[in-house]
Image (tube, rainbow, N blue to C red; front, side, top):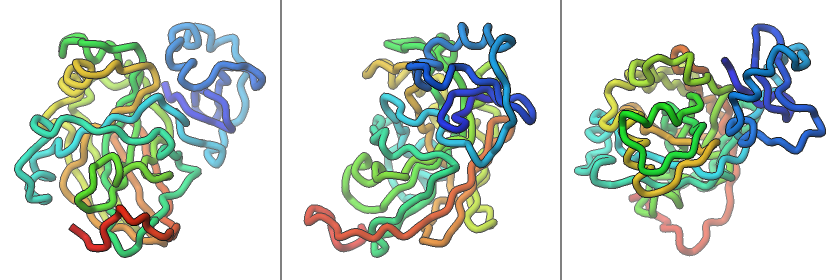
Length: 276
């Protein structure tokens, strides 16, 4: 099923219609709908329907509790970045949930003098609380999968600092539920900038696959329903500029296309003026 944010409501997209999971005046939010998914799924036949309008799509999880990133999780990306470590040695990083936008948003470039890159990734949305789970149990805690862009300002600052600006984590256009994806490690991730293909790799090239990431991350932090995992990017990252259009597509999952805009601001004194 395709779980989405349509006109501010959690819905299931069914062909040219959407099925509303909650009433418009309901206090249940997107994370709540994910946490109670079996109940909502079983009631789909009784819920109201309306026409699907792709222009009304927003981020499928507008404010997850946390966004957890896997740095350098493809060997080809390790080679292109000329670094010695991978996710196995670096651990993971956190991005601010306020960096989330959907296909109705845009990617702002705050410092045009600093290189800012696109990173196409498979996003994993947690459906059940995961603490210290084994690799064998890990996928049972997944709600579904989506397309994700991990926008990154290059430099020597900590990853969370360079990746947490508003608009730096586009996700969507919807979440395909886990039952539709028999093997998340057999997907094709592709990323374009202005129609030019930059990234194209199978998720089987990950150093830590989806289950291994969940096992590792849940050994340190509690993964909660609605949390989003950015699983890492393959080779092909490169600079983006205002006026560009960035697109990510993952076969069988989703796609998202989003514009890049100028959001020049005066950098705080802690930001270095040179590119590292």
